[in-house]
Amino acid sequence: MRRTLLAIRNRLDGAGIILSGLCMVHCVLGAVLVGVLGLGGGALLSPAIHRVGLVLALAIGLVSLGFGVMRHGRAGPLVVGGIGLALMGTAIMAGHGLPEALLTIAGVSLVAFAHIRNLHAAC
Image (cartoon, rainbow, N blue to C red; front, side, top):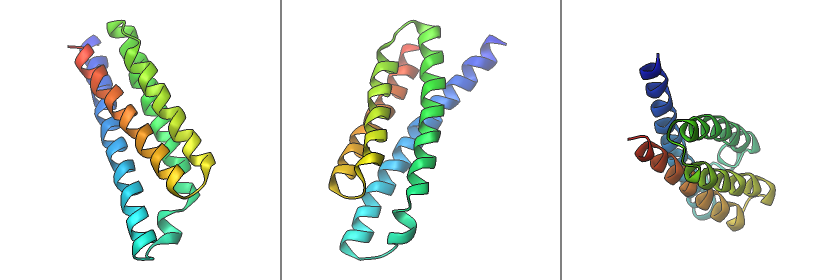
């Protein structure tokens, strides 16, 4: 049972890393495609995409990073991930533009780093 829970937690951390990377790609490509080429603004900048992404990031981040603290006793990954998630939430409130992109990229970078540290702390 314990091995199964560890495998699930590791998969959640992996999903968090992938989701962070996809979010960063979406942010950068969205800025390039919309800002430079004027393409895809309606779909790429949809507030629904950002809200769903944040909800997924919150769910995966809090569960996997929280389980990590219970397993290895190190709160650092949870704190760093929490700061990243807060930056992502702030980005949604900032509206579209450079501040949103910078806050999102900083946030997802911290969340991905937290998931990586969480995986390493469990070893």
